[in-house]
Length: 407
Image 1 (tube, helix red, strand yellow):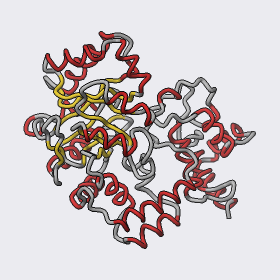
Image 2 (cartoon, helix red, strand yellow; image 1 turned 90 degrees about the vertical axis):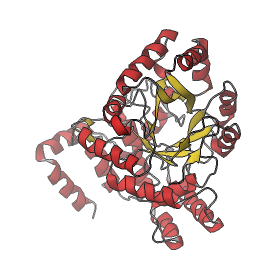
Image 3 (cartoon, one colour; image 1 turned 60 degrees about the vertical axis):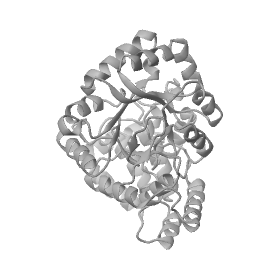
Image 4 (cartoon, helix red, strand yellow; image 1 turned 30 degrees about the horizontal axis):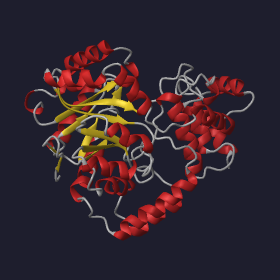
């Protein structure tokens, strides 16, 4: 991979970074043996930037365990201060020290303020955020500082100009080209010599997985050998102002595919025809996607137990893939994954409108209203009786009956 220079820090960063939010799990915890293999494989093949956060479960502790010896100095490590957890100045110092202990490091290469918009940043500034940052840098606890942005376009440059930041992290993909910082915000950050890190390049996997038939045909006609993920990652990496794309990879095959893509694309190398192809696919998706959810999970956990990302994902897939009829594939997925058949119930109908999810959503979605749509789409009177019946006859029989009804 052809590394990209961050002017303000002098570091040359691989265009593909490892996002450690979605590491492989085993019995609900990080599968340490498998995740270690994947991390080492990524580093051995050219990835030199790993991103984690205080809120990513056990990710920091795991990385502290595996990034030792020869691997400790082969990567730049980034973690984040959880804005949502800060109530007073002392919280910032306490959390940073805890992170250093988890990561088994004396200093953190890149430290970002996690998930901020202008309101969140102003709240932190009143708690002496800049004093904390400057002291941590003087003490050698952090080397470079930035923030991950989760607000509207019109606020981005205000925050960018409020401090001498080194880097910034934004959501950016061909479907969400104009959300958060947008292309103009990314260009402005780069003009200040900052590193620009991109999250959600595949929009939570939507741009990598199966697409509506019309979109699939457009891509295959343009180049039958390119995967959907390749189109999406190339589009982001084609932007010369992007330093690094962070991908939440959790298999060797995904790592190898993404490295191959990053090896093959350089800034401004996509043709006009390639860009036009992606624009056509974007129009198809715009007409099909009902909820602009990236399934990032920042809205979780829900106090009522609603599995918000999964509810919205299944709802979107119903329209993306044109599932027809009442007993369709999406209906089956809904009751399998959030309806309680295969485990705990996380259906949309459990939402009581408390609103705790609203302020945490990067897309600023009206989650309560969207969950009402999901409930109306999939849930019906007598649901509890049906679930009781299904649990007792067994899920295989249920699937067989549904297939018969759906003929």
